[in-house]
Length: 86
Image (cartoon, rainbow, N blue to C red; front, side):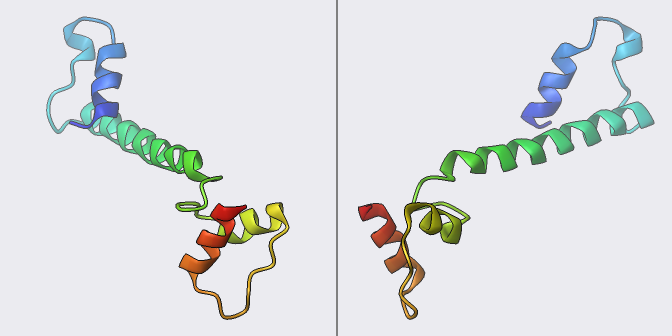
């Protein structure tokens, strides 16, 4: 059970109607909702590093934002180091 599934289960009201049997359609629906929520969480978690030069997934965009023109033969590590200096 993922964290998202535990959260979903805790939000459901008490009672047998809301407790899914393992492997039935309702259980699979809740599992699918939890998996989707986990995917969205991972994408949002990456946004925390969007302005971090060491871990940004959009290095080109961050360089443009700072007005840095990358050297043609610069490695990614060199580009990140230069961006960090700014």
